[in-house]
Length: 397
Image (cartoon, rainbow, N blue to C red; front, top):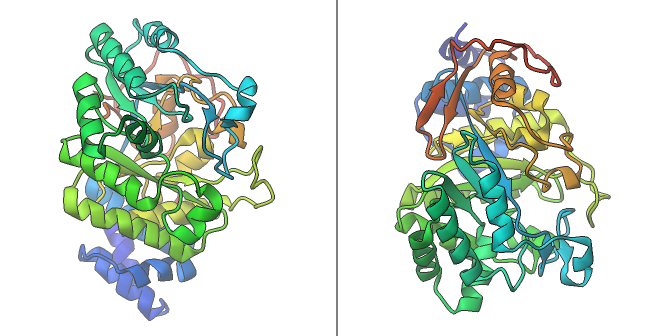
């Protein structure tokens, strides 16, 4: 059966809970589900049921396409003025001898390292320190664009921008406008965590508020920039906190249409102040991806970071609403590995990413940051076999 037939079969099941059937009918008819229905999916939706709904939406939007890009990360510092309880990556100012703080020349050395590589994006995010201020990033963006004009700069989160703009005495709009003129192209979605204050104040109480995070994205959208959004799940939050978080994003997307991708980020419990909180199961990961796909009806894409959840879970996620598994990375990020992700040295060749996608019956598409097709790998045959360091899994129905 195809995705539509599976959804029809599910709806016709006389034993299906009436409320869940009502949601399935809404999905079939392209109608939005409510906040209460989102919570109900978390409370009562079994994995198979959620997979049918999410995969129907995924295939209706994207068919068998799974997107990835060729990118690398620059993490200018892991020293930070903030003390997020879940972060294994950052070091407080008083611990700065345990971290690193790059200058613009050092960041440009990383850019030049990829001069001969067909990468399309540099992703920049890290800690927050006073000396990496507005002038620091303005200089870097200008030099990066002068050196390689076609390289897309996806840079910094609202957590970093809030601090930088406050120090510079600029509004969110004024600060982003200036940095866009310096070369900034788009913004990643980090720092969202969980928006509701009763959770946010416990896990990240000293960083920007939900309202400030959302406003910075709104101003970026007003300037014509596209951005992403995230949610850190699987720690001390309740299901309704997740739905509240997604609802705030959904409302802003209704207003601006500027978000491209929603990225659920799994809480990993090593090396930080919340290490006593157990991690959720892979089953819950897949349920969460599926519910995100069902709920976030005005977001084009749902992404799974393979470097955070493992390659095999990234394969499975493509049957539960996910249509993007991020990029090749080339072992250029430590944010996930330092918190205990399976990938301690995250990097895959293009061939490995393509074969990971093909091995679960999907159609690999290399994209640029704005989802323009760079290369369609459906019929590409590589001359040599990729090094097999992930599981080849069947498509999960």
